[in-house]
Image (cartoon, rainbow over all chains, first blue to last red; front, side):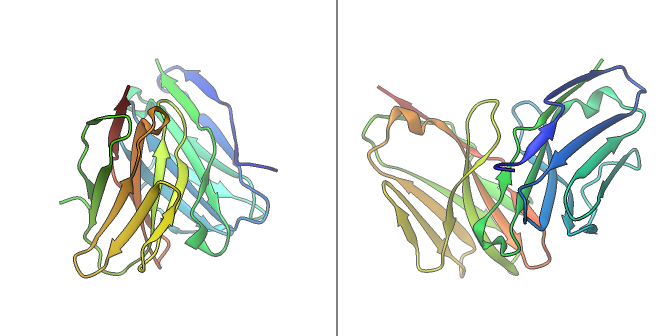
Length: 114
Length: 109
């Protein structure tokens, strides 16, 4: 596609439920990143994919968080047993093989846990 | 100490002013550097890459000082539309990217 597409754009869920966030990167972009941003805060790195493998999962805040990427394309970020502190905007970004070109971000999924 | 540090500001400047932001990084293995711009409640957008020799794009100039481990962004002739948060990004070859928390700029009439 023309840009990085994320869905849903907004998600309100009850505490304790599982949620799945989707990211469709720009075609041909081999690297894919997930970040989250709480209101008024900076970006917090979650996980990075190169192709389908995740060399760096160090940012995942707990074992309730997991992510996968299939076919070198779409990625899903799953949060199990959501907590109120999980409320944030989850941003996905992708970049071509030469990361010297920087990333393109999607418009994010705003997650609210009530 | 954070891996990437920025002065959070806010910087409040009049239209036409010149303003500069600095960003320091701690990982000497860092390889590539960028400035992003983020408008309120929007996603970050790439503003420019930062090269060792320094680079310019219109009113914007970016510089890298590897010895002192900082990057800078200079904005000349500020416009109202430059009001945003400016994020510096530092990448290592291992694939990790670290964002600064951003510097907020408000340009006033």
